[in-house]
Length: 132
Image 1 (cartoon, rainbow, N blue to C red):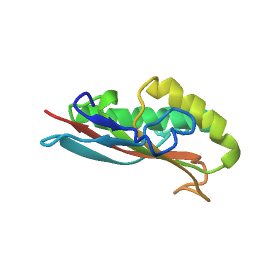
Image 2: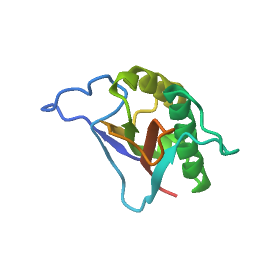
Image 3: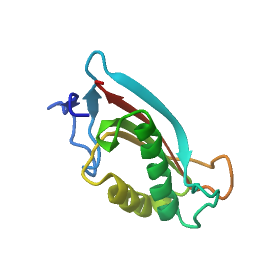
Image 4: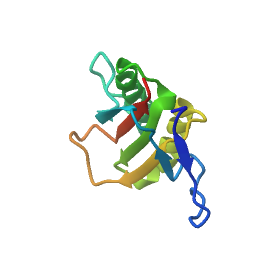
């Protein structure tokens, strides 16, 4: 979000891998969209077999919902990532970087016991904001 303020306090350690920011201040009068958890299901209903492909698809789905609200990738201010297997974190980070590029929203990454279906390995929810 171009009108937002990135919060990087001097008394807090830098983000661990540099792919997120500690906080983003949303300006007054911004429109805010909360996006429900998105999984790696393609438009045709199929689910990719790898966590990397599921991560890319889920992030594309998140961006699609944001775009339907008249916003875009740079308006995403927060993401929460859920991954089923801790050993898949490198694949998740690679896919995240491929889709988000240099955009760095606030971010939380959780390793969880499972998702709504056994074939799902990744889920993402997000918040976007923009002064319209």
